[in-house]
Amino acid sequence: MLDEFAEAEENCKKDPRVIEVLAARGMTDLDLVCIEPWSTGHYGDDVDGRRLLRCLVHTRMEKDDDPYAHPAENLVVVYDQNSGEVVEVEDNGFVPVPKEKGNYFPRYVGEPRTDLKEIRITRPDGPSFTVEG
Image (cartoon, rainbow, N blue to C red; front, side, top):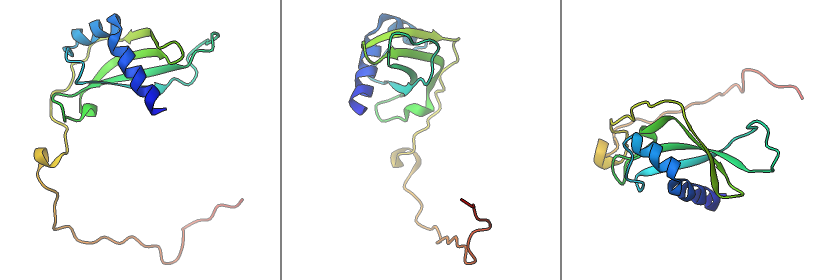
């Protein structure tokens, strides 16, 4: 649920272990940090009925930047959605966060092209194969 994702990000940013590992990577402005929770699938023995999330971390270089251009590689925050707590911070070694711009807003790359010609993809004779049920 979207509101749970926001809650996970907020709670992760309050955890001292997360703050410390982010600072070690030069991410001290938490307003620019994006913590994105993903389902863990099976994450070993989960006997306590926890709802674990694997949170990936990205950052922006500025407010409107694309965070996916700046991942914190080798860093995963394991978060329990039921308890609202960080279970573990998996820090598997520092990789410098890319500083290159990766933003596609027009103010960064210019206005979209207007000279593109139409493209049509057709299959007038139908599909090349059929799947039998």
